Length: 131
Length: 149
Picture 1 (cartoon, one colour):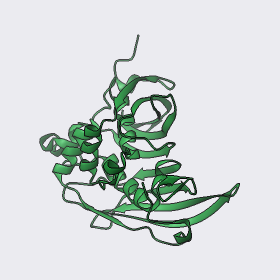
Picture 2 (cartoon, helix red, strand yellow):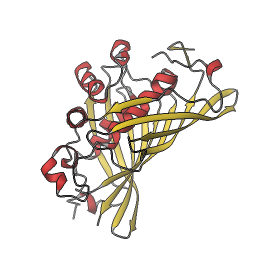
Picture 3 (cartoon, chains in turn brown, orange):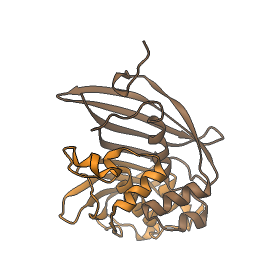
């Protein structure tokens, strides 16, 4: 029986990849939201945490992260400068799942690739989910 | 993206230029729109009040963006390509919090002739509570004055 909720996902589950167009309007919205300097828009470069945000968003497209979940930790590695206008494909998988008391600690591995198939970002997020 | 700090400016123990941001519910709502994260804990006061958190909180990734912004300001494209970040989210940031993000150069290592700057990072609220803590590593020398060497 296929999983129907985030809590049912097992270690090794791979989230379906999601593609995003990093358009000037999308990045402008992001830059304004985080109060970033306009240098990013002037230089035509995507803030690396914007790619991180899209990568995290990709994971919640197929299964909503349960209410009450806490984003406990985050690692990122930024591998390439990404120009505005790039198309990125974000994917991820469940790397680890540990039950700890009333919480399930889930480690998610995430990746972002540009339209040439080059990795631009990798990361790991730990989410604590109420059981 | 040009960096403020040239390699000759970087010394162990130096502090990075601080970033101070006042977080409003409007900022949180705009971040939800920009990131696609519409978890009601961030944007629905009626929902959030019923949770143990007692009210809406900012996205951890919003506060982390302030930290990345500080690193971009200091290191430019060397952060965007070759930067590594590793943090824990300790305390939620709430609307009307003032978040001060600071960093310090902990050490500089050389591997195969390439300098790597290890930084300790922290974001605190106006009460001095740690919101995010962690570290970052920046590989220097790939970019100078914003251009690839």
